[in-house]
Length: 332
Figure 1 (cartoon, rainbow, N blue to C red):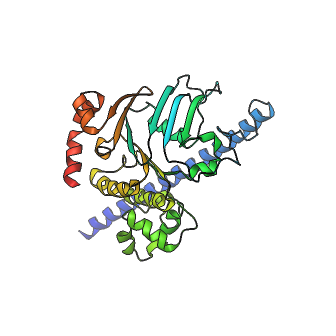
Figure 2 (figure 1 turned 120 degrees about the horizontal axis):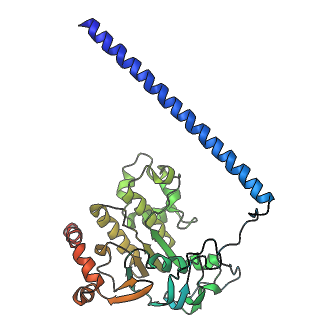
Figure 3 (figure 1 turned 30 degrees about the horizontal axis):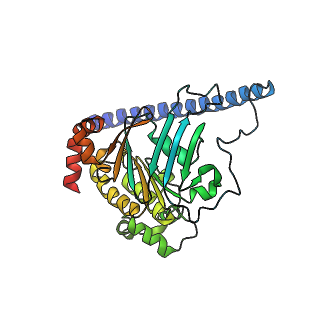
């Protein structure tokens, strides 16, 4: 029996050594291929640059910043799209998608209203947010906040209007406190803690040995999905911007976690103009108005009850998602 155990142990040790050797060889080959790939890319890039086929100059941004633009003080927090025409990379033949996202799009959101945009993927919902933040400018038409064109603001002043919580909020490899301070870098500790309470983070942070000094890890790897979104909400609360943009803010969360995050989002949205983009209808049922976007246009609009009664796209999608909505309402 002892000899048999020894032989099995020796066999297992031999197999483990082979496994370690194979793993080391695989890692070494991967490093070699990565290094060769980097060197090859650098070599080809130099050749193309010398031949004039690519430029070594930094390209201009998609928008031109008016450094001395209008101040954001005293501007009404309303949103207006008027006959907007937009196509991504329209001026670049190599990158243009050869298709307009908007061909005469109009939208008005009054101050303090909560408006939701829903619809299939690729209909322009996120483009509305991209244009509001001036990541691009439309080829034609006007976009205004209050009575001012976006182009009349400097980018710094324009950003003061918006607090954004997106599907994948970026968390830096810093402490919880430093990540919340991304909302307003000069905030006091008391203000950071108030924002954390509003986002539903305070009780959890109180259980951590390092408290607000707890590191979040690379891209928030030490936090759960719900905790990452709550940190983003705390940033937005701390920023205290008059307009809130929620771009699929709960789409990557399970239904149970979503409900806790939604309570924090409702607190964030109180008294503020809010534009929500969502696929889960359970997150926007209490909006003041819901707009259904199809092919870059508003095809349906109304409250949840009105759209369900109308029997269109929204009603069909609500029926498909009804089980999830019912579960959400039970938990809420």
